[in-house]
Image (cartoon, rainbow, N blue to C red; front, side):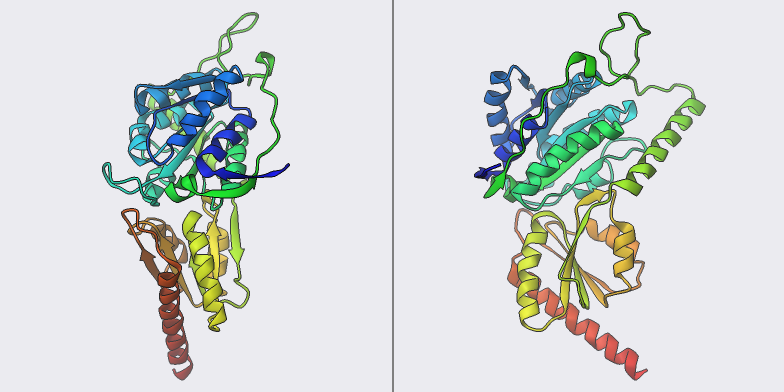
Length: 363
């Protein structure tokens, strides 16, 4: 396939089309509105469904209805919009209905601003809706990954009957990069719908898609079924990247756009002789816990960098369990951590790690 210069929002929208998305329901919100603009033309011209709903609450419930019929379905939004979708996401999880959500994060809380942030980590990774549920969360760091992860999200959603989130941010949605789009997949024919889907009950018993389990024992049994499925996903679908960690004494832990910024800082730090590298979680759930825990044995300190006041750092601290020091550096409100700032934090972390090492040797 030929490389094209693509804006992130347009790239994931077209990737969804080519992945076989049959229905899109959404409501415009910056910084991802270009996705709706692209799909508002592209979907109808292909004979597919595009609906600009009256609100994000309506959009996610339209997703629920279409997905229950076995249709490949997607919505996209940003923080204030995804907040309104939380009840619907819980219903999707409770009904084991697959769907794709793209969240192009912006500054918050509240309406905040339209600048890039990573402030939806807790909302999407921990589950902002009610109940014991999980959703797969993919964190791209380039426009190419935004394309690839969108296609992957549809496949994972179908494979596990789960909501799959592509968690990007305003900078990734708005930037333009060279990337390749995948070939067009054929749409599923009516006879290719999943066996559980609500496709009519001619010549068979009717299906039921519901999240209601009024009997407590039945609800508990269903929740245990979900947890078993989540354990299967956690064992099979972990994704991560290691960058220049050979011989590293300090590891940066960062995801998405912040990981790109960290790579620039690491290159500069390496030029100064600092032994530093990057551990990038690509799946924020399931989180690469085993791999991060193994990294603890190879480094003296970790630096978590995020575009928020400290959300993923809580997971890193839990996994590392004080085996090595964990520093945090974050910018928030739409302010991005610059490579020069990350470099300065790396110098501090390296200095502290060396001082601790010397103290241990002296003891």
